[in-house]
Image 1 (cartoon, rainbow, N blue to C red):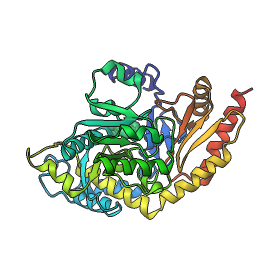
Image 2: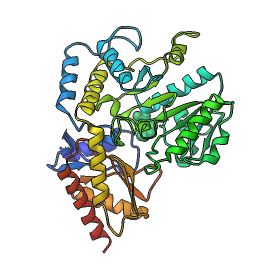
Image 3: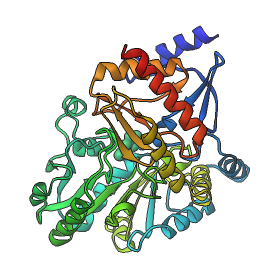
Image 4: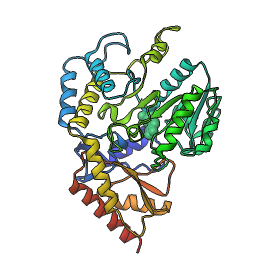
Length: 397
Ligand SMILES: Cc1ncc(COP(=O)(O)O)c(C=O)c1O
């Protein structure tokens, strides 16, 4: 059975790499993945910063069950009043600052970036779009145009015209933000660059430059959102509020979802001249909204941002080893940099052999990622670190 399934996996599913981990998952609960061959794997990846409330949190599962008994998809986005959608948008905007009071729900992070880019062009009547060096914003053409990863881009050229990149966390780069620029898209903590935190003063200066030139500041919080960095949203660390906020990953409580959020005035532009200025069939799916709302309530009620901050500090305290050059990050968005890409490969595989799952970054081969469910306990952090240190000891011999 296992072999047949594995063969079918290799034969029928489009592959994303020649060497997938191919763990055969039959269940997931809390911080653990269960495989068909009876392994219980400690998950330090959380579906890539998705399962912030842990796998199958009972309140999220119950919310999905309740909605399942009412209705699934009924109409493309925006036409009918669907209670889970309305309640979720209401709750979400309730925890966001003024000016971020209208939510457009879509289906993924990259789609939310696309919506934000369209909104920025529309609101400013400008065309130039800027991203940052080493950024990652998704895999569709618009997102890829702002992503700075040559290897991912070059087979897809030409991408969107009139785009460019400014250096991340470098005041000198801000001069490129001119009155021709519609939007500057920034991760408030860069994820796939290997977890890079900017100086809050740079974010302030970025905000000021955007305000002065009329360019819209877009924060991509697809990876940083919902408590991951020790605050509900990463922008809270600096207090810099964007004009458009882009969300995804943990937003849907384990189901697929993205959203872009902005002011009523700006968002209204998408509803006329032309009408249906942005359209999605499935965006704001009621089942996903029910799950997302329940997950947000869990994040708030269990104060998971604060817990993430404490557990992140514990990881940093425990992960001390001669092979570790640096542990970067905040909360439970961490990069363990070994300064050696081959060693990273060996350590990630070595940990997995001991049932601890870490993962790679797209643009930082010398480090591996720690981004567990925010519900991880102190005991599990200690178990994870003991395993990582043991594997490092063994492999450094
Ligand atoms: C910062 C950031 N933005 C956008 C995306 C794209 O999200 P999705 O994979 O849901 O399209 C990702 C995915 O990793 C991300 O990390």
